[in-house]
Picture 1: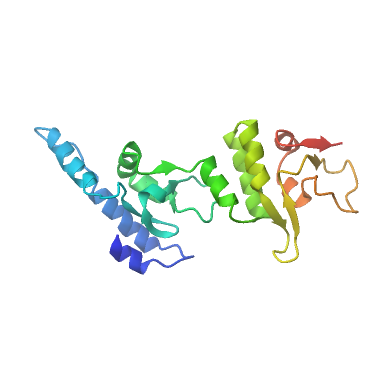
Picture 2 (picture 1 turned 45 degrees about the horizontal axis):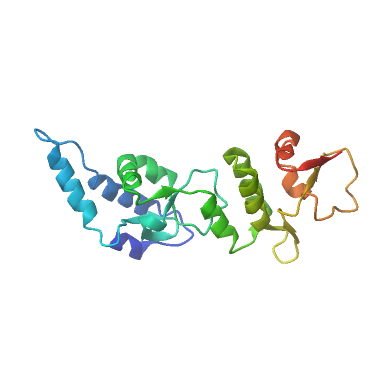
Length: 212
């Protein structure tokens, strides 16, 4: 992985490096041995115990990182832009190796704690806000956790320099399109139309109260 790390280019797909990393992971995927399967166990244990800090170097969207800080995430969490993520393709192509890492608690799926950590350190665009709300709808966190995540979500709606700043934790309602005029603008307690228009009324009702 050291060689791959030197050639990693930020903000690029690095498809060739991903193929190399998958090859390395599959190379160290241990299969059943005959006549005694315990041989596989010995070799596998020797490999994983060679790690001094209990982690394995993995190629992520942020370069080569220790597996203990890497997260597994599906495509429904694209708003996580600062968290080192193992790509979905790599997780599929090296499935057995990744499963072994999970069993050894050397890597784990991204969860609300990772979302909370990232939201603590930055604002989000209206596009990322929509992705986050979509994730909340699917994840179905407890009301307290949902409120906690929303309170940390500071959105810049529109232009990054001159856009309106909205804290989703302070939003209490949304506009049902066509029911009331919005030409005069909306208070900060109402979900911006740029975000609300991407959801159905039914979806928004599970997050906020409608303004009829």
